[in-house]
Image 1 (cartoon, rainbow, N blue to C red):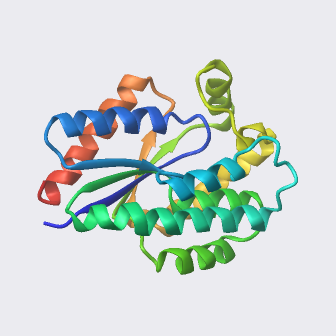
Image 2: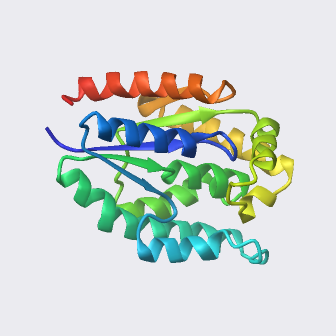
Length: 212
């Protein structure tokens, strides 16, 4: 048996962070060797880069600067945390990865999916997840959830206009088409418990097929 690298993706307000946290806790309690982490962040250097990227005051940040910062944080996080855990046969559950950069910076920012993929393939040495769980939700609903949740971190991306978030969703659709063999699509508009139950069932089935 070898470790697994599983990512969770979705637009703002899709609820993936809440679901992934509960799933990680529950799987760990059931004896699965789980490591929960996030992007950008997860380790000291990457968390420092995260604070720069998501700072609401950094409105002058250039789109390519943003993409490069994400790639830099991703590289450090991958080599310092993800890959060592996979080598220890752990199940790494990561909140966001390359797909986010392709959808947000590549498509929504207009840099180009191929261009952003290129810098990320350099940063990660083409290391991709074995499974990606995508939380699908309409932009308006996601943003309404954010507005209603006063405990959630509000970051620079949350403040973008609605058309940006529609572009993110369209970007994700292109990414899903490209990598459909590793994508599991979840209807994130349902209640938290319904989404959680669906993701947990699918994930446990997948882990069983991988020998866990």
